Amino acid sequence: MGGPRDWEAYEPRRPGMIRRMLPMLLAFAVILGGLAYLGGDLRELLGTAPGSPRSAAATHRLYEETGPIDARCGTLPRNLDADARTSLKALAGCLDRMWADTLAKAGIDYAPPEEVRLIAAPEAAACGIDDYDWAGIYCPDSRVVNVLVEDERAFPMMFTLAHEYAHHVQEVSGIADQRGSEAFDEAWSRRLELQADCLAAATLRIATPRRLESLRGFAGRGSGVEDGTEAGYRQSHGSGASSAEWMRRGQEGGTVASCNTWGAPAERVS
Image 1 (cartoon, rainbow, N blue to C red):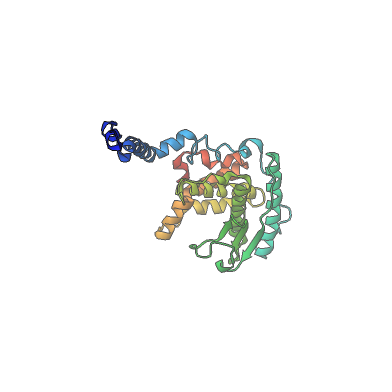
Image 2: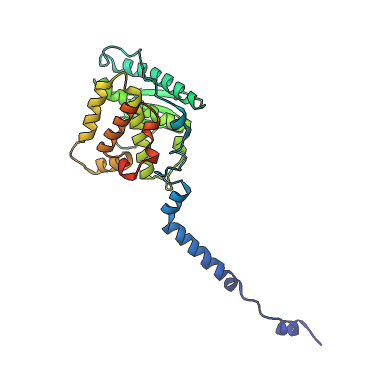
């Protein structure tokens, strides 16, 4: 009389779960390995790598749909150094107008930063309190611009303000949306920072051309001494020579298109 044991004896044995899954697991491992090995090439092919001419940041409509930035700022005091805070506040108003007009040409609504903090110490900033030494910092989450006011010469702080405003424009326009593949991607950061240098120069090219040229020359010479902090800054912000070159492009070109670091070769954003 037949029973379960007789049925089991004549039923072909099925391979175990592990044996059935093994070919699939091996194929999956090969695919993952290939992606890891060819990740940069694939990102380039798909247009998502920083520096790809097909990336969203490199083909943003601001480059094609906007012309020269109207960089006039008639409200700046004649003596910029008489009261640095007054000069910075006047420039902030001009930057809001410049960027509102420029983004409107591309159909993008511009909203000013939630706050512009002119502070005497980093502890008063809205973010970056524990970061290494900085002259200014933009907080993308709260959209607050912070500038340290600690020098009698106003122009370096004015450039810092224009640079942090450029980060705000990158944020509100969506240029900054294309993050790198890692939590902190140095190549992505350099392109972001050098573009901000370029855009800052474009917005200051009419009001302060001689001071801008002087600052550009100073940036190009560098300090000549590089410690660990300087090396880290160069990796995340680019070299002094690269900064000076992008500042030149912004000052001479005066457009957002002249500041497209995202489509530039790696050696120009080093």
